[in-house]
Length: 97
Image (tube, rainbow, N blue to C red):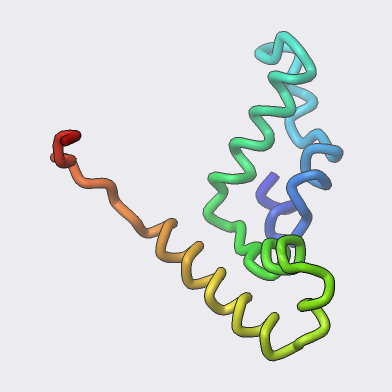
């Protein structure tokens, strides 16, 4: 799985590759359970740096041609992904009001 992520494969590509196929018979009662597990591992993978993919997938088509806009959006997305990866939740969250 790590190899696929480092190669920059998308989430759907990783799911299609079935990186845990040899383990499915032991612990995944259904195909859906296997797919969901792969997706969770992919999303939580620290090697994943997919900001450009996220930006290109979510920008409206007419904005994708503006290279400066795309580059800026990719930098912001990469920063947010890095920040989220380093976020440590508080041990004493504020009580709900």
